[in-house]
Length: 127
Image (cartoon, rainbow, N blue to C red; front, side, top):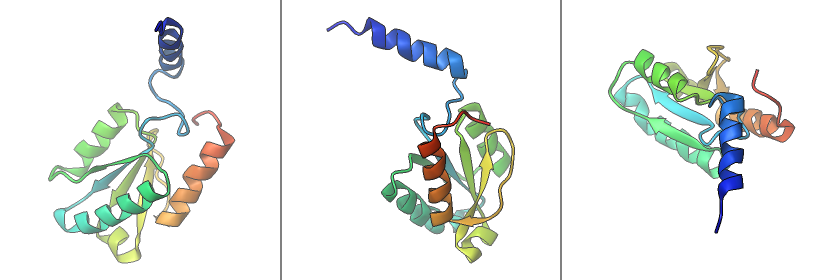
């Protein structure tokens, strides 16, 4: 089977977006970043809720500084980083950060799922 056209199309997409795909097209839409080890159980619960809703999410629960985790996610060009610290665990939500550095306010899992779902329905370009 010849796949040349598909390979060229994928190459054009990657070049057009410079690897920073819009949320609806990104292979990973969000990454969960915990601040400390005590936040991991809540992070696992949040990851399960997002995966169940169909959000493509990965978890970074390593014992590293938050700044390093954020920087790595930005280099990977992941559209959303979901910060989980003590405040988020107490309030039952996450603090999303866009890859362009814009911080959003604390929101629950359902609010974030609605945000991603709406953004994917509109299929708008990344802002």
